[in-house]
Structure formats: structure tokens, C-alpha cells
Image (cartoon, rainbow, N blue to C red; front, top):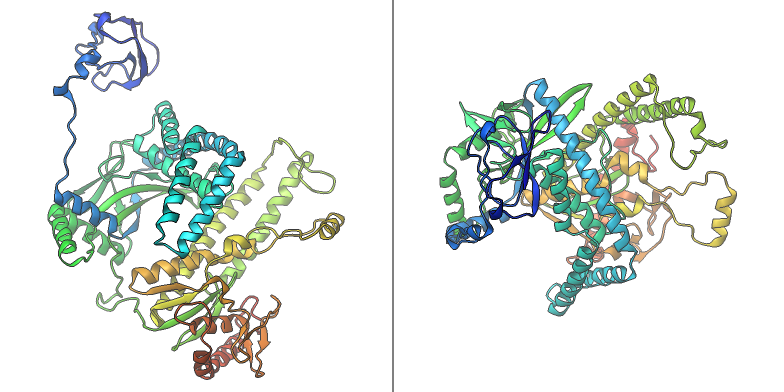
Length: 632
């Protein structure tokens, strides 16, 4: 029986084990030996290792399995106290938010962080490729597709009648059958963890970072197995995943010294690093963190006792876990710490430290969210504006982005003429692409411009949502359907298909570019989150509400073309289509199934005057509202 020792440079001669009769002959995995400075890895047989002497006189003692099975050495299970159970309930019910701080570390540690993130990306792609094969085979089976269809139907029925026990039981049985098939095709959670365990041992990754990457990929697998997603996606080179540790004392460890937060990640260096505080809000958040860390047990006990007595969930500002996000901005390496904190975010104040930056209003708001615009109606204000827009700079930025894409396409065609057909389309099959230096520079400029545009959209969305929260606390809007609008239009019949084949480059695209530039889905998600977190109410009307077709003066549903943005009601009053939809949502009945005609007749006069003033302001100010029908 032998044991092989690895140094950083070579394989050492083998060493004969003493007392081989007491050892098992089953080969195990590679293990790190930290007690010896002379070698780094050892390939061992099963059993427990104890290094008893230096490398010159190595002896390895293997304990037999019978000793390990001794009851005295068995690990006893910790019995949770009543307080620990209540604390777990409190932490599961409390809200969480993320504090983003720029990390202050050396350039060498930044390069190591980028390298670690890229290794996580590669391992994640290998796991994705393995799961993708199993998913394709699983979805191809008729049995699983039938189970998936039944599961979806039962889920829809359960939404209509959530207290039906028979439906719950039937859906649970179908879910168990689906789970068995997932295990058979090796796409379950255990299979993903097992394969990632092999990958992280081979690439020398931290277990907790690898497990976090499995969670991200597992979320995509769940969408394919139970949702409407078609496939899971890979991370391209340059798309670095975050280095996330799901515990604050593992992977990325938090320390407090001299009234500051320090972090340590042994995978990128043994030095501690801190964060940069750039504004007053970040300083307020850090102060609350330091206040909790000064006496964490006492703060937890007070919060749990308050929950048991009054049922109120208080904000403790407990740091849950951290994540390192690597970004390359204008050619420089930047690393950010995303610190997940228990509780709601600290309120923002103006420079005086007393006046709140954002106020909360009361009242209803009807909001019609389109692919490029948003219209809203309340008793205080009506509005119609473009989504994700801060001033007029977004138009110039989007135009510049299109110019760079055309520029890159011309350069790519000039350097790779053999990869294109005579009609300009790309040839099928494997191709080798050559990138010129000019192309690489344009690509970097385009990436930087896309990053700035994305940040601008994010800030614009949050500003619009904060403004809406200032004028009301109850939102009524339509359910989102933006995912369906991204898909290509279908060919309705054989005649249209025949005409499509005759025409060159027939377009069947819909609203993909508009959704990418204006982000209506993100706007609606942020709107829902902000109102629910600040004590407001968010409502979605039923699917048959049909706000774009109803006419309250005729009490009838009248179909209109999508291109008809301004239309006349039955009494001759001309209204803007998007605003009128928000007006009908504002006057929805109590069960949100249809507009309340009596309320519409009472409020239309006052709100229509505000609507006319709004259109006059847009015309005189020269504001270009996309697809509104309002001529500037």
C-alpha cells in the first residue's frame, strides 16, 4: 500500500504505509495537508490522517472504520432552544437590502479577485453544459412534458382557489413524479452539487463560493423545469459572476477595528481590506452596522422579544453575507462589496440631516405601463413621459450606440470576408473570427457606453418610482406581459408564410429593442417593491380589464388599432390613448375586474382638464414623447 506526496514542483518518491492491515483499500480524494511546509497535497486511502513527523521520517497513522463507528466518537445533534427557533422565524420574515460599497484594496488583490471570478465563471459554464444535456433529454420525453402541463394547469387552478386541498395534493403528487425523473436524468440539486464538488477540487476553489455559483445556475434550471424558460445560459468571457459567500464568517469574513469595517478573503490574499465611504447615506448605513456589531446578541434578543410580544418585525441591521463584484470601468479594475443587511434600508435625508429626501403621499394612482412610455393618473397630478429617461441625453446615447454597432459590423466584415455568404448573411458552421486592433478599441468604447446607459436607465427608473410614491400610496396597473412582447411574431397561415419566403429579409420582430432601451419590466418590478416596502399597496387588475378598449361614455368596449394614439370618445371628447387607460385603471371597481362607470363619470371632467393642460405643456416645451401621437 502506497501514499503519493505532491510538492509545488514535482512528485516525491512513494512512502510505504505502516500497519497496512488496519487500513481500507478504497481510494479516496485529494486532501490538503496544512501541518507540513514541505508538501502541498497528498493522495490517501480512506481513514484519518495524522502527520506525526517531518518529511524525512514520515509516518501516517490510519484509523480503522470500527473506531470511527464508536458511539463515543459519534457527533451529537444540537437541540435548538425555543429562543433559537424564534430567532430563525424572525430572520426568515425580516426584510433585507443590499449596501454597495467600493472596495479599497491593492491592485494585486484586485487582479486576484478578477482571476477568482473568472475561474468561477469557467466552472459554472462546465456545470451548465452538463445540466443542459440532461435537461434536453428530459424535456424531450413525452412523460415529463405531460407532467409539466398538468403541473401548470393545477397551479393556475390553485391561484383561483388557494384553499382547495384536493388540488394541493394532486400537484404535490405530480411534483414528486417530476422530481424522480429529474434525478434519473441527473439534473437535480444533488447532482449539480456533486459535479461542482469535483470541479472545485480540481480548480482549487472555495466550497462556499462554488455552492453560491450552483445556486445561481440552479435558479435557471428551475425556470426551465417549472417555468416558461427554454434553456439555461452560459457566461461569456468578460461576464464575471459575483464572488458570493452565504455566511458572514466564511469565505468573506467581516471584522471591526477602529470604528471601521474590514474584510478578509483568503482566496485573494491574506491582507484585510476596507471600503470607501462616498456619501452620507453610506455612512449612515455603516454606523447602523457598527451599532449592531457592538452588541449583536442583545440586539437579536430585543428584536425576537418584540416579535413574540407585538408581532412587529424590527430592523436590526445584521450583516448577513457579502459578495465581491468585479467590474472594468474605463480600463481600470474596480471591485465592489455587495453587503446584504437584515432590515429595510436607512431613510435618506437632505444635507440638513432632518428633512427626508423622499416624502410619501396618499391616494390612488392608475398607471399604464407601455413598451416605451408610462402614463399615470391621480387626484393630484396626471402625467405622460418616456420610460428610463433623464433629460434628452438618452436619445444621443442610443444613437451613438447604434453607430458603434454599425461601425463594428463594417470592420468585422472587412477582416472576415470568408465568413459571409454572397447575400451578406453569415455562413453556418464553425468559423474563426479575426478582430483588428481598431475593432477591439471600438468594442471597448461600445461596452463603456452600454454601461453608462444602463446606469442612466437605473437612476431614471428609481427617480420616477420615487416621484409616484410622493403622490400616492395605492398603485393600480395591468399585469406584466413584456416577456411575450419580446418574441417574434408568428406566421398565421400558409399564405402569409409563402409571402414571407418570397420577400427578402422579412421582419417578424416586435418590441425587443424598445424593451431593451426602456426597461418597462424593470420599472414595474421596482414600482411593486418600492410601494410594498414603504407601506403602500400594489394591485394588478384582471386580464379581462381591457383598459385600452373601454369607453365610459358609451359603456362599451371598442377595438382600436395599435397605431391610433389619439381617439374620440362617444361624446366627441378627444383623449390620448395611454392616459385614458391610466384614467380607467384609476377608476377600477373594488375587485379590479372592470372600470367603475359611475366613478368615471364623476371624475372625468376634473381629470380631463388636467389631461389637456398636460398635453399643452408637452407641446410648448417641445418634449418628444415616443408613440404618443402628440406633435411637438
